[in-house]
Length: 279
Image 1 (cartoon, rainbow, N blue to C red):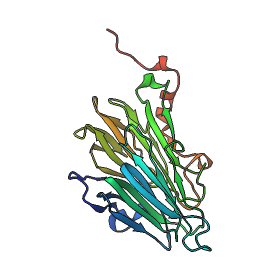
Image 2: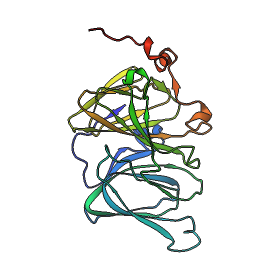
Image 3: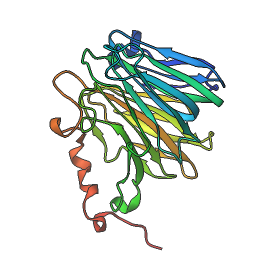
Image 4: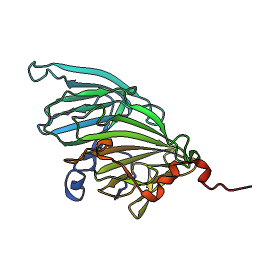
């Protein structure tokens, strides 16, 4: 399912995939928060864990620490900055239920992506730094570099096992594929796209349905839907990916996810088996 969004995001919160109506089966709220210089944003929930990922700008962000329930006013805070989302890794705050979060935008404003889902577990909030959001050139040295891309993982089961979410980013290089070889998993996943330059585009197939994807579009991926994609030549494609663990099946090696389509797994093997044009 594709959710297009052409105009600039407005000041405040824009919901892109709410946890209700036709998108309730995604099991998470997702949207974007745009703050003008000096704007203050506050959040608290009795039931939901929440995540904020800085996409651009500067902000002071404060949150209850693990002793906050027994010591009133015990908070942590930090000024964070990200010039842009293509060249710089993200800051990402993960906060449990009953944790207060306050964000004050800096003099150039700030933009955050936000996700929330139910989680009764008690755990400490954590701000993941750009260095902790590990970055890798995935696909490097395979498929004649046609699927080499940057994958930044903020947190997953290896460093945030208490969470019901997995969150990260991908930078698709011009003309190259990502989410490849084609794969699927039972957990719901959200992709959200930005392009450089903004008029760029890419293509994806969700199951057997093809979509043109453009700047600020959102794609919803449901159980078992295969989802490879490619970036148009000349453009860079950034996308945020958020996976919601499901009961009894966390996403990751423990549940053998993702599942690659058997007929396409061979492309990860020796490159000399891949046909090349001759001059």
